[in-house]
Image (cartoon, rainbow, N blue to C red; front, side, top):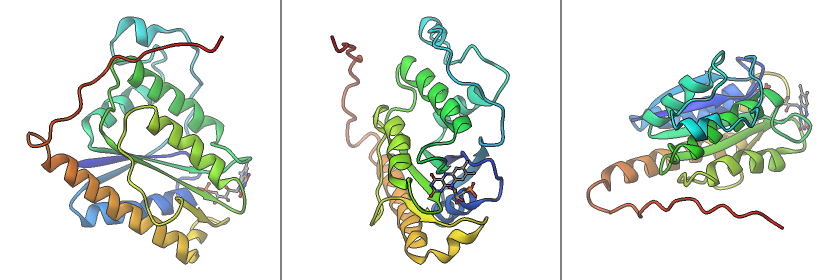
Length: 210
Ligand SMILES: Cc1cc2nc3c(=O)[nH]c(=O)nc-3n(C[C@H](O)[C@H](O)[C@H](O)COP(=O)(O)O)c2cc1C
């Protein structure tokens, strides 16, 4: 069992990385493998809305010069996904947004590849905009029939200089508990296979607001 985490910070060893590690440590202690993929330092353009992924049903984005396609397969093989992001102007930084739009659009338009994975999101910020950024990340998970574990507060941790978040003792507890609950949910999902029947998948109904 494995959780794949995506770090949306441009900094490889910044606060988002340290926050992801706090969650990852709990997962590893529970026997779950943990990998962080650094997204925020890459060159990743946004979705061009060409519809190719939906038409071809090949589980691929037509843009092939970045880490999106390999990441789709990594999440597909994993038991869980963890989205980590710093707050930039009260939102998800542009590179991470470009990455997530394409990752999740390919998934949902190809029969919902991440359905029933366990998934959570965390954010690191200096002062304000944590909730709106966390909501933004959770939109991707909740659109995808992903099972979301919780903590004892919203998954936000505070710090400015890289590593400073370790001083946020409430934040570190939030990450720790999230990691434990995520591991617990992954194990429940795995051990219920063949015992508890998953609900039948429904084809997505698309309407539009007139
Ligand atoms: C371009 C930019 C915009 C930022 N905007 C916000 C903001 O709106 N609210 C906030 O609290 N912190 C903001 N910050 C601070 C970062 O969110 C904060 O330092 C965070 O811990 C950085 O995480 P990292 O080290 O993983 O990159 C901003 C930082 C940058 C570089």
